[in-house]
Image 1 (cartoon, helix red, strand yellow):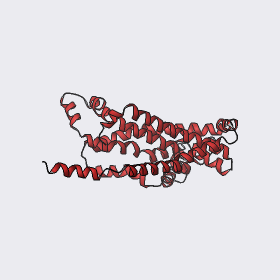
Image 2 (spheres, helix red, strand yellow; image 1 turned 90 degrees about the vertical axis):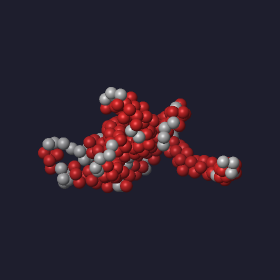
Image 3 (tube, rainbow, N blue to C red; image 1 turned 180 degrees about the vertical axis):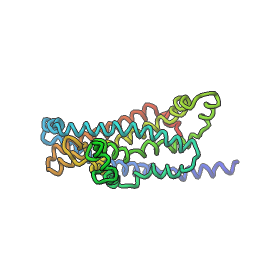
Image 4 (spheres, rainbow, N blue to C red; image 1 turned 120 degrees about the vertical axis):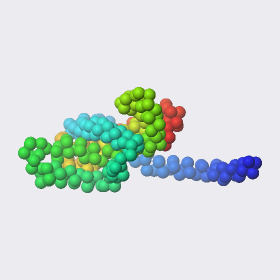
Length: 288
């Protein structure tokens, strides 16, 4: 025992960085964050306010811009809750049960990470477009999906549905099934087991997944661009509206709307940081 202790201490000492190394790594990280995150954000807000706060408000209060903001919140407000339900169900099934086709389900969950959002939009065009597989049937039923809100929602759901599930699957796998089995043995129903055992154990991972899903939904461009048709005031979300304003060289208005998107991202990060600070002891106890 006496011989093993110095060897362990030497190994720990060899893995401890010197003060100069720590300072260098911290400085490099800060420079990277400043150059690629802070300065671009400052540039967005500076350009948005270049002609004064009055011009900024005029660009934000434009009816077309307000319609884009409204549609962005509608798409996120529908896709995030649906992905929340899917993410919990899929992660619970994958982590808690063994069944045929589990690997196939995991592959499909990861699919939006590997498929370009533009391709996802084209897939929906082939399915629901006027010349698509279901296009004639939808036209006969007077239902419009492409170049309308339903198509935008479907495209948003596709590109965002992995985020909640991918946050919860490793967390649930790490926690195992012992607590759920104990609750069931004590007479708890499946619903009671979920609300009183499973959900409290995954609440922080679930929150992170929802935050990531919401940020991705509001910032989605590629898939939504294909299925939207770029109809001003009707099918343009905030990212699409920014693109149109930029292409028209209306820089102040473009950066004003872009600043709204940036503000939403900053608010999300602040909320995440506050929660981590407020509940840091509970978060540290979660197996990651």
